[in-house]
Each structure stands twice: as structure tokens, then as C-alpha cells.
Image 1 (cartoon, chains in turn cyan, orange):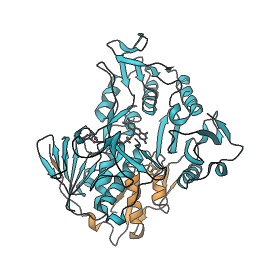
Image 2 (tube, helix red, strand yellow):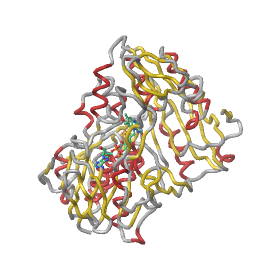
Image 3 (cartoon, rainbow over the protein chains, first blue to last red):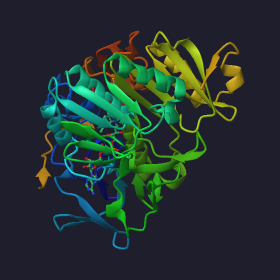
Image 4 (cartoon, each protein chain N blue to C red):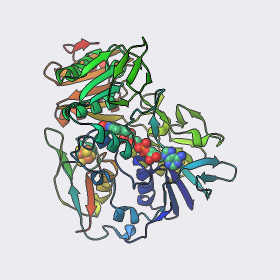
Length: 394
Length: 83
Ligand SMILES: Cc1cc2nc3c(=O)[nH]c(=O)nc-3n(C[C@H](O)[C@H](O)[C@H](O)COP(=O)(O)OP(=O)(O)OC[C@H]3O[C@@H](n4cnc5c(N)ncnc54)[C@H](O)[C@@H]3O)c2cc1C
Ligand code: SF4
């Protein structure tokens, strides 16, 4: 293998190219990225950067010297527009074609939008800086969607003094992911901070005055942030011979087609630890999967290793750091296994089938978290692990 | 736009024979614990989960683990530099 093309120059793409070099690959690496910036980190966009605690330079994932040491053919500010499996070339928006022996797709996701003009989304550095400029004390911000991203942005905006309305279609925000009890707890934090949280409302469009709800009512706003989930960036791969579902469909090795791999938010792969295919939009997964894809691409077929991680994410909500391990969606039972929900120091565990499949913690020391991560990684039996006195919650 | 970055260092020689220095930017740390999993002898976490360095110098024997930690850290808070 002498020519490897990695498309998408963010967390997953960067981890891929770094791992290729660390594993001793010394052929050509072309790293293609649509954004003009050198790879930067996204989680601070809705946290320190939006709060104006950090400036953009703190988001750089690597120094230019570190990048230089990787000896890349770096093509920034240009999108890949097509994949030609027959001739094994990637087409770029500037008209050039890049041949490959191996390829890794790391094009991430983009925000889902709503009908109507003028709303903010929050995915890129530019998005975050634009929104930040518009937030000031007394400005009215409507955030559509109380998922982790919408909730973080609402919290920061409130801290900056904006009047924030948070609109959520579900009865309890995040209940489908974290369960009702934890969802309630996170919702209460918003209300305590003076956010106008309205659940069970569906926004149909963005208007000049604000947003229109399904019943016709208009909620007025100076600024609207739409945070209603994301769509994998796979359109450029149409006709390229890959299976595209919700993301690039891969096997347990993160391979989508011979010598074509995918990693990060765009990849839907089969995780053998949970016996299911999944696509996770978590920062740590982007790095870990980029590393796994790089290693498997270089490895002899028999030496490839399945990618079977315990997914992990964190989210900062006011003074609470939420940390979650495992696969929470589709859980059948939730129990408080350490601490106390009311005191905002706790671990809740999630069951699917007979197993502990997830854990979510707020305010607990690392050694406690490690124990629960370990329980998930070792497929621990629910009844043996979750003490009988643990309190079931919904 | 095509950006070409010249090769100014020699990654293949990194660390061979002499220790490398580990740098941690604790205020970037998001308490994920990934570095401890990758290199237990070099990183630990305080009670809030913020990473702490157990040693600032690593020789060849632990270099691979620390490189792994640099790669998995979700906050780009760890760097390996030549002293
Ligand atoms: C505001 C915000 C806050 C977040 N907070 C957290 C958090 O607290 N915890 C957590 O675990 N995760 C968080 N995440 C998620 C985390 O940032 C992502 O999981 C991570 O960025 C995924 O990395 P990636 O490289 O797979 O994709 P991305 O970061 O989306 O990068 C994909 C790159 O590919 C480029 N690209 C797309 N199409 C093309 C094309 N056709 N050709 C060339 N380039 C292309 C894009 O421009 C982009 O630069 C947050 C995300 C956002 C946006
Ligand atoms: S991996 Fe990075 S973010 Fe996680 S604990 Fe270590 S230094 Fe902190």
C-alpha cells in the first residue's frame, strides 16, 4: 500500500493519519478537508468558546509543527465530491482526482435544519463565533431541541445573560437516551437557572419573528438556534459502491468495502461488544475509531482486530459534568447504583437483556466510573452487579 | 486551496535512546480518563477526574503508551516534546 487518502480533516481523520505514521506506514497520505482551518476541536464550541472563555487558537488539535512532522499531502478548503471504485480515485471539488490503494471516510455529520431562513446551527468554528457575537444580556434566544448540544448552548447563553427559551418535542428532554429520571434532573437544572423550558412542543418553521409551533403559535426571538440532531455527510459517496444507511455501513473492522474504511461520526459499524450496529457522535469514538481503521487498513487480513469499544461521552451542563459509558439507547431498566440523584452526585446503570449495558454519572470520582466502565466492558450480569438495594427509576 | 506543510522533523527518530517530556494542559482536560487507560504508569486522575502526571519524562519503554494517550485524549491536552 503506497497511497492512502483520508477524507475529512477533523478528529477522526487526524487520528487516522497519525496512526498510519505511528504504525510505520511511509507512503503518501492525502488528507482532504472541506474546512479551511487546520484540524480543531468541536466540543469546546458549545462550551468555552461560546462562553468567550477561550479564543479559537485554543481549539487547535495539533500544532503546525506536529502536523508537518506527519508529512501529509494536505488539501484543506476543498471537498471530496465523488468516489470512483473502478479506478480507485477520489474526485475533489477543485477538479483534481486522487488515486488510492486505501481510503478512510471521516466526513462526520452536519446539523439537521428546519424550514425557514435565518436560524443558527452549531457545528463549525464559524457557527460558534457567529452565535457568540449575537448573545448578550437581554437578547432573546430560542433554542430548538433540548438534546445535549441544545442544552449546553442554552446553559452558556443563560450564563451570558440572554433570555433563553428551550423548546423540546419530547415530554422529558433526553428521556429516550438517559431515562426519565435523569432527563428530569437535567431539565430541572434549566428551570432553576431561569430558562423557559417548554416540552411537548413541535417547531414547524423558523420565521422572521422567531419560530412557529405546530399549533400555529409564534414564539418570538432575536436569535434562533436549531439543535435537532444531525445527518451523516455521505452524499458525496453516492454511486461509489458503498452501502449507505444512516452513515457509511461497515463491518466490525470498520471496513465498508475492500481497503475502504470509515471512522467517526459518519461511520455505522457493527460493535461486537453490544452485538449491534451503531453510529455514535462522541468525541472519543472519533479518535479511537480513526486509530482502529488505520491499523486494520495496514494489517494483514488475519491480523485485523474488531473495533469493540465501550462508547463514552461527556457533557457540561451548568456545574454538572455528565459522563456516560456504553450504549444507553434502547435500555430496558435504569437503577441508581451509587450516590443520590437529588444531590446531583450519582451513578445510574442501564440494563438491556441480562447485562449492564450503560452507566451515567454526575459528580463521582474516577475510580467509581472505572468500575462501571469495566462492568460494561466485561458484559457483567445485571443481577450480580447491581445490588438488590439499588433503587430502580424509570 | 492546497496547503503543503514541509517535513521539518523526523518522526521515525522520535524518542530513540533519550527520554521524551510529557506536557499536560490541565485546564483543557475534560476528565475522560482515556490517558489512564492508555498509560497507567504515567497518568492518574484527581477526585474531579482531572488528569495528573505521575512522571514528566518517558523513555522508550513507555513511549508507545504515551503516544496512545496523546492520540486518544479527547481534549488534545497531552503533548510529547523533545526535552
Ligand atoms: C458543538 C459541539 C459540541 C460537542 N460536544 C461534545 C461533548 O461534549 N462530548 C462528546 O463526546 N462529543 C461532543 N461533540 C461531538 C464531537 O465533536 C464529534 O463526535 C467529533 O467532532 C466527530 O469527529 P469526526 O472527525 O468524526 O467528524 P467531524 O468533526 O464532523 O469532522 C468531519 C470533517 O469532514 C469534513 N467534510 C465533510 N464532508 C466532506 C467532504 N465531502 N470532503 C472533505 N471534507 C469533508 C467536515 O468539514 C469536517 O471538517 C460535540 C460536537 C459539537 C458540534
Ligand atoms: S485523556 Fe485527556 S481529557 Fe481525558 S483525562 Fe486524560 S488528559 Fe484529561
